[in-house]
Amino acid sequence: MIKHVIDLKQGELFSLSSDEFIKTVGVEIEKLRLWHRIGILSFDPEEKDLYFNKEIIETKFVKTLVEFGLPLEKLLFMLAKLEKPYVYSFDDIYWDFAREQWMSIEDVINKYIEENYDEIFDIYFEDYLDDLFKDAEEDDECQEAKFIECGNYIIMKKINKY
Image (cartoon, rainbow, N blue to C red; front, side):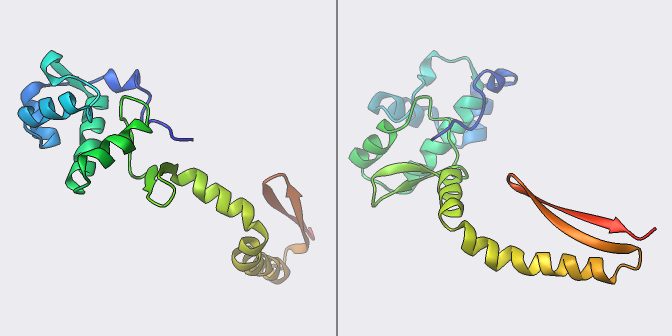
């Protein structure tokens, strides 16, 4: 699921004047007006006196797409697949050119982990668990160590001699 970067209500705690906004996003007001007219910016910069975090995030997101050099038709197609305002981060989503859709990085990672859980567990955690057992065995105060699977967690219980 593609999610917005911020809670849009929290994004209105701080505001910038038009000049501060232009300086922050690095895009001239004429270009912002053009982007709004052609449909790649959800807000109209001519109607704003104050700019909030959501406009900053959206402008930087759109600016990155524009600077990538995509044809306008492709850019419009890509943005049409997102909800307005375009308050997204490339840390959270990416465009899958093969599937022609936006993908949530978190969803892709979670799906991969789910599909490959046993292999991932074997590779990354088996050695770690072995080391924990060895540490417990070498601990003079530890009589016994047990691992208990508890939902998504593995709990190590050490039983002390004393």
